[in-house]
Image (cartoon, rainbow, N blue to C red; front, side, top):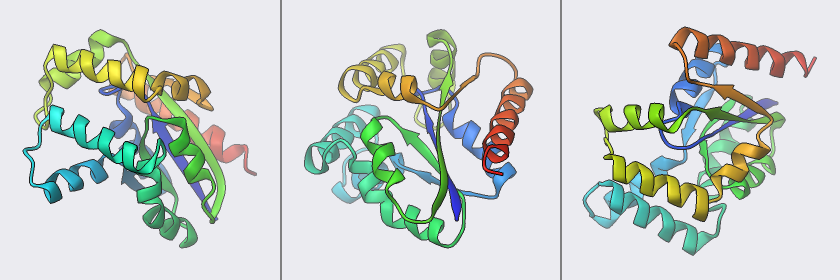
Length: 188
């Protein structure tokens, strides 16, 4: 049996960074739900950009419902779990996604954690990243969709744990290590 650990948070909060550190702690596999969107963009032959990512993401959810990305990723996730491999989900934006994944076989324990950080810090990260940078207006538009359409704020509110990512990388990693210890200690 294995752990299912899912990250939630608005874009630029540090979910991927958190999961990379947790992977080192628990020897798990990261399943990037956004990869499904990027794969669809390639298959459709459209230019990868924030507008097309948003359009494809919403189209996938219209076709398959609010848990669409989890439904499409479920075979990979379940294969890892059944092999006893911890799975780290990057990332949950709609609570239906997390609930869908919790139904999978092979889970000994699941946990949803939220990464919380200020808008200013997120903008600084998203606007300066080398891979798929966003403008200030694109960040605001993405927040609007994540909060109003996907209801990501509700996911963050339902998280089992909240980790603040406003300070140094060392502090963030220490907080993640405390989260992992608490999670594993509670299963003994």
